[in-house]
Image (cartoon, rainbow, N blue to C red; front, side):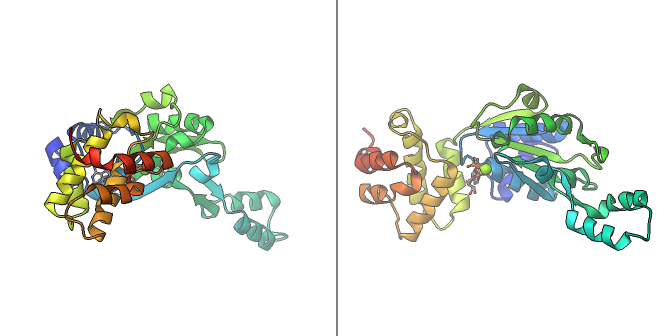
Length: 292
Ligand SMILES: Nc1ncnc2c1ncn2[C@@H]1O[C@H](COP(=O)(O)OP(=O)(O)OP(=O)(O)O)[C@@H](O)[C@H]1O
Ligand SMILES: [Mg+2]
């Protein structure tokens, strides 16, 4: 990848429309071999960026989906206890206890989880997506520091495991809580905003080619208005790009060439997932479509 423009084109060819600042952040993360932390509202294309980038770089995608209560053994590795037990039973009497113990801790009984898989992927290396890291707990964040800073982990049983090839590493967060400064300092950071009208139109064209040009244009217009200064305050949440794409597909499925207040009100549930927001849009459908 020799320039930001090349990267933009390559992502577009994989169906992803980045804005220039995002492309710049990705470009630098690749060049500097630093992890990239993408923060932003739900549905603005954080996870999708990682997926599109894997295809661009032709690397294997290894995904660690974080959640509350996730344990290290689900992120890093665990031992295959059942197989170890069988080995011990078979070896009993035939070998010294010390030797049996050494044998049950060999690599074949190790189950590698995403972090270890990523470290042990040979050249050109994997793309590790640590998705929704804000859902994991703080001890896990602390554990990640060594990986993020040096692409290695230290654990008592295995010692220090260094990366065979540095994985391209992308972390995403919905900012349900603030991440630790130490995590942020080890990453390049990019805040992902909702797209402007032009980029949203480009996304709809790419993701929903069946939609007519007039319909796609109107969809992008409506979304820009709903998230814009005039309407944003009326709603509790904002629709993400995921909702835009889904809504466009729904309108195509309904055979629509354009949007009128009636269909906007009837499909409000594709844009908003809060009952109050759906009611608000249903009642305001005509004025949302009719610029003052
Ligand atoms: N820039 C983009 N170009 C093309 N499609 C996009 C883009 N951004 C988002 N999308 C579409 O929106 C959908 C949702 O995006 P994605 O799941 O990546 O959002 P997210 O930020 O990870 O959301 P969440 O925080 O809820 O996980 C994608 O499946 C894709 O169809
Ligand atoms: Mg996501």
